[in-house]
Image 1 (cartoon, rainbow, N blue to C red):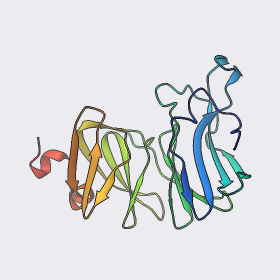
Image 2 (spheres, one colour):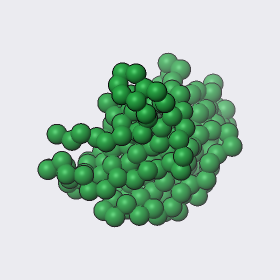
Image 3 (cartoon, one colour):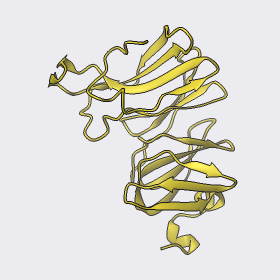
Image 4 (spheres, rainbow, N blue to C red):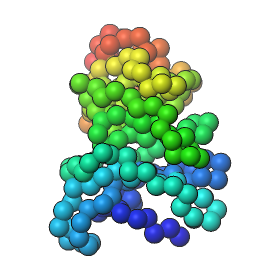
Length: 197
C-alpha cells in the first residue's frame, strides 16, 4: 500500500498507472493547499511517481510542471506510456516529456501544439507516439519528441488509442468510435483526406 504524497482531489484515483519490469509509474496532480474534502487552493503541480511494484517503496518523484495551474477538467491524472525503459508522460502544460525510468532524467520534451494540447495518454507504435490533442492526433518521433504530423478530425480526442495491425482505433469524447489507417495519420492532414465524414 502506497500513500501517494501531494495528491489533489481525485487525480490519483482517476488515472491509470503503468507497470514495467517491476516499476510502477503514476502521473497525477498534487500540491493543493488545505485538506480534503475542502481545499483552500486547488492550483496544482503535476507529479510523476515511480515505485517498486513489489514492495511499494517510492524510488523517485518528479515535479513535472514549473509552477502551479488550475486543473480544470483535467484533474483525472496523466497516464504514462512506458516502452524500453522510457516513460512518455503527457502534461497539463500541453506537451509530452520523456523520462528515463530508472533515473528520472529528462530525455526530451516535445513542443506544444498551436491547435491542440498534448494532455492525453500517448500510444507507442513502431517508433512513433500517437497523442490525442483536442480535435487532432499528433504523431511524434519517440526518439526526440519532434512533431511528424498533425492529423485533424471532427471528434474530440481524450482517450488513449489502440493499434490493431496497421489501424489506429480511437474512442472520441463525442460518442463516436473510429478507425484510421496508421499510414493516413502519418501522411494526411485530416479525416476528410481519406474520404470519411
